[in-house]
Structure formats: structure tokens, C-alpha cells
Image (tube, rainbow, N blue to C red):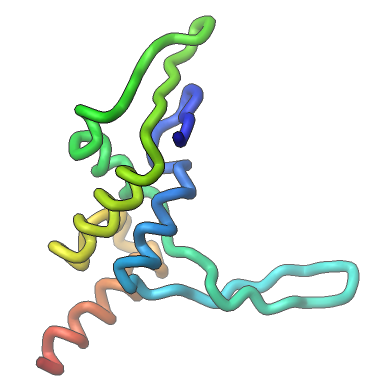
Length: 118
């Protein structure tokens, strides 16, 4: 299960695994550590478009309140499957709509390039 206490899918890092299974572009990130700068070669993309999955997961999502906040619980296997399938059906699915998001624009560019190569 994935628990989302008081937050939505834009912070649901589990969805990145569905992206990977669908073959979505990964990025290189960098981390500053006490030993120096370290390359992180499978850095995930932007998650701001992930809330689009909420409707697809509605029937398997359990919701309730905890104190004054909302909490959601979603079966992990189903979540991953739905995210993967959505991206396989539409390679642009779950991307954010911010025009200056470098990661989402890079995915759009890669998808466009793959389409023109076919």
C-alpha cells in the first residue's frame, strides 16, 4: 500500500517506478557529498503531473480523515500498473504543463523524436 497523508499524487514517488517500467526517459542528477560530487544516473522526472492518475485509481483508493487531514491508501501493485499502462498508451501522460519544466520538455522532445524516426 501507498499512504498519502494529507498530500496528493504529486509527491507519490512510487509512480516513478511505473515510469521506469514504461521506459520513460531518466535523467542524470548530481549530489554534493562529503566525498565530493557524485553522479546519480537514474534521476526521475518531474512529478507535478502525477495527480492525473487520481481518477484512474479512484475505485481502488481508500480515503478517510486522520485528525483534520485527509489520508489516502492505494494498493502499490495496482498503482504501478496503472501508471505504466497510462504512459504506454500515451507517452506524454503524467507530464506537467509548466512550459519551463526542463525534465517534462526533455521527455516531450524525446517522444517527438521517436515519432519522427518511425
